[in-house]
Length: 350
Image (cartoon, rainbow, N blue to C red; front, side, top):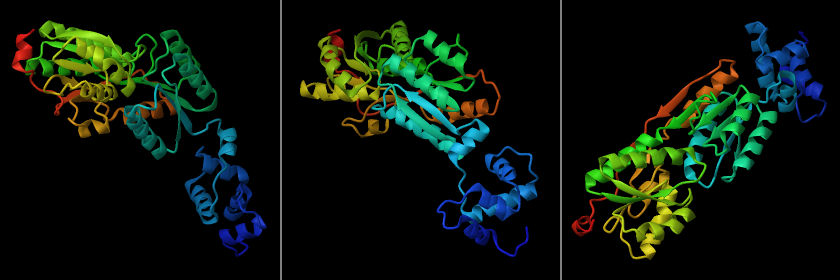
C-alpha cells in the first residue's frame, strides 16, 4: 500500500481515537494481512525476512503490543512457567527463584511462583493447577511423595526438579550435592578437634535433609559422633531446638540450614552459651545474611548456578528436546567465625 502516509500516520487514522493499537492497524501499516502479522508477532515463521522486518518496523512505530490472551489462543502457549517452592520464608529459595526468573525473562517467558508452606498436599494441588494453565513447571525441593510426583511427571513433558533426586521417576533434575557438602563440614569440625556434636534436623519431607543426614551418619567413620535432634527449616525451629541440643553438652551444633542456625544462635545467647567459645555452630546454604551474623556463620555454599541450570533444562524441554539429565552441583564449606577448636577442658571431658 502506497498512500503516502507513514505507518504511524495510518495508525492514527485507523485508531479513530482508540487508545490501543490493534493488529489491524499494524497490518494496514505494513501493507499485509492480519494473518501475516500474527505469524510474525507469535514467532511462528513462514514469513520471508524482508516482510517480517516490515511488520516489526510498523509494529514498533505504532507502539503495538500483542494481546497476551490472543497470542495464547493462537499458539496454545502462554509463555509462562510455574515454580512451586516449599517455603518462601527461606531466603535460599529467593536466590534460586531470582536466577530462574532472570534467565526465563531473557528468553521471553514469565515466571509464576507459588508457596506450598511445607504442606505436601498443597504442593501437589498447586502443581496440578499450574499444569492446566502454564507451559512448564519447576518444582523446588518438593515435599510430595513419589506417587504424587510420578503423577505430575506423567501429566506433562515440561517438568524440571530442583534439589531432589528421584531416579525412578525420570524427571530432569538439578540438585546440590548436600551429602558431600555435609560430610565436608563434618570433616572441618573433626579437623578442629570436635568429636561430639548434635545435628538440628530439617523438615520431615525434605530430600535435602535426608541427604545431609547421610553425610552426618558417615561422619562416624572418621570419629565424629553426631546425635540427632528434630527441628525444622525455620529460625523458630532452630530457636526451639537449641536448648535440647545444648543439653547434651556437645562441642558443636550442626544445623540443617542457616535459618535454623540463626535461631539456635539467638537461644544459645539467651542461655549464656558463647559461640564459638563454648560450642561451635554451623549452618548450610550460605544465605546472604550468613556472613553478617555475630559471629559470622560457618556454612556450606552450593546454590550458585542452580537456577540458571534449571532454566536451561526447561528451555530445552519447551523446545521439544527431551531431557534425562540429573546433575549434582558441588557444595563447599565456607569457614567463618562461628566454628573453632573446642576448649581443652571440653575435649578432656569426653
